[in-house]
Length: 352
Ligand SMILES: Cc1cc2nc3c(=O)[nH]c(=O)nc-3n(C[C@H](O)[C@H](O)[C@H](O)COP(=O)(O)OP(=O)(O)OC[C@H]3O[C@@H](n4cnc5c(N)ncnc54)[C@H](O)[C@@H]3O)c2cc1C
Image 1 (spheres, rainbow, N blue to C red):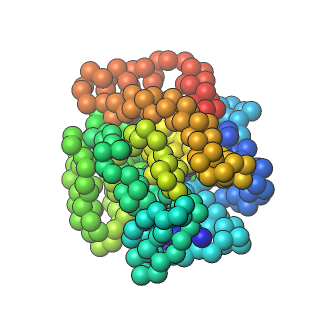
Image 2: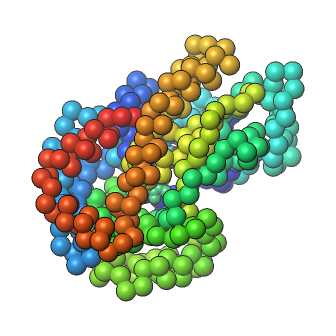
């Protein structure tokens, strides 16, 4: 049984990538033909300074040669997986877990809707703010590593006229990435410095919060901000990674952002969540519960522990605080040969 808190799959999101191991798992499960119509096949990724001048352009056909990759809107991926899962599992939306207790080798779950059921295994794949994590692990057994940054994302009409492109517009302590979608819209993601960033405002107040953070921004960013949703909520959060010495306890196990949350700076959050879930499923098919949890952790943890610190280090490259680091970053992006960046990204995407 799958329990989803929202009343329908969340939309309005951003592009993610299934790369390398995640791609091969998707291939093995026969999912690639289902995802193909949504594959964005971005031709290039480019980086621009505050004045709109190009710092770096990467040709994706060269960069991704020999690498399994599907670039897809998180919405389209979620909807496709949701449709497939419905064929084999009961999916209950608009519900969540209210409490979990352990009895006679089973997890006794009470749902917010009031029902109560018993399960052999409970898998928490419920994201950064995981309810399963909070129910099962005392807060002394995990730690949020806050990155002191905010993130927001929404979709808008293609006011920049981009096609099959991923563009990042970088300032000193903030940036905006925009990308094509399979429809007429584009997706925009904003990341900005927020020392002590923990909570974000709700609903309509998000608009003022975002516009306040991007006062006096570059013209391209301002154009996209003109289309910031009014009178409704859109995605916004404080960026954090999760540190936990173990991802399982009793009958429960965590996967994806609920367990580690690499954040968007890794570029591999979705791939890691997907590949982790596949490894867990394989292990559950092969071993008893305890053995499966151990095998899943043993295989997955080294990959996550390699990416986590590298991602933390990347943060101040994308959002430098000092003018010196900002000037240095832009200079390096202009001067370092394109091939060095291509190889860096290719190596990065070959790790999950
Ligand atoms: C702006 C942005 C850009 C990103 N860019 C990339 C990228 O380029 N490449 C990449 O690979 N990754 C990227 N990521 C990261 C990626 O989106 C996540 O790592 C990935 O979605 C994690 O998947 P998940 O299933 O673990 O969690 P989520 O995608 O967060 O899904 C969790 C699900 O659980 C549901 N839920 C939450 N709480 C409960 C509850 N209590 N009960 C029941 N259901 C619940 C939610 O509604 C949701 O459906 C980006 C993330 C952001 C925010």
